[in-house]
Length: 484
Image (cartoon, rainbow, N blue to C red):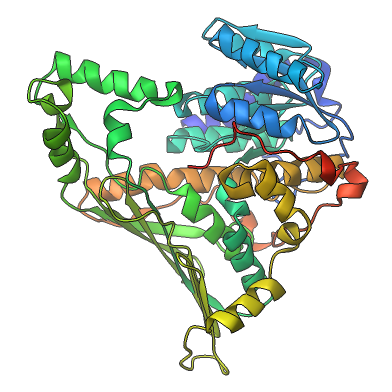
């Protein structure tokens, strides 16, 4: 019996033991549960939330979500008690109900938060390695789960999260905020309005020079990486720091998968990946740090640029790039093309052909401005100015939270599901395997097990602020929101 067969046979027992009566009759037993595609639950008019990990990103999430009508900050949880106290104080200062219960100070404090009977949903903003175990524990405790990226780090973790989610019939969504960016949602609308024709190819990336952060990041949420590298340098001078493949794909890949209705009519099948030589890290260390400092005691061997190409079941291609070391200006590339046109970001531009397959130039500034306004996504039309005022990566964070809250309150499917979490997260280990093998093709698991063929495309719609009881005048700028 292999690992997946074992999980299928025993996951329901763990779920029942952990969740007790919290499942309200929705647990599916016996064989594989029904697919989670297009899954929805009964409306949750009040969403009682446990925030786990309330440092930098977690605090920003608490601030946003606490102001959404129908969302209740029920539990705050963090390894550091002072982070919990800081958020409690912010809630009080802003005349918002403080969390009813707090859990802090222990490595497994998250378990008490997940087991809390007064919680409907767990919002995870811990360091990335902790995401999978907390997701699994929360699902087995009968809670819906929202998690910062990535949702998993290994293929085995992806499968375990998928199969657990199917058994317990709870939402598990990865909070890929870039799916809600203004230009990303414009591109989504162009695709789904048919303006670009039949989609054949897309390109995305994470081009963001973070060399200094990799060596001495000033914020607490990333210090664990800096500490580990410093310990490595002191214990084993001259050793390599290496990462293979595309280590951070989802900011660009998530929106592209939504453009192409991936896992809902198509699926990513295989990937090839190659990395360039690594030079920028070592040159930065030599230029900035003294020869005897720990940064110069390591061989920074990760390639400066990784390029990966994905092919889908329909024969479409996706080119992905990852460069976190060179001075190339920030970009997520964000290109999607079809038989009738092409959208290309950074800077945004659009070409539309008079007939499929014929040459077309980029629209001039006036015509593009008109098209941008005409095809602006309804979410950005209705709440874009509010979101920009609140903040959070230009407003996308607030729109993301507002949208999942609206879907849960109205019994709608969430915009992304557990198959998206698994397939987007799986690109990291799959590209690493290909890169190590010199660019050999690697199969990407079909986490839907064929359900993508019959799944309906997800319609990412608007929100009704009046129905939610949200007063636009209540929106205020929040300095805690992140911009990069």
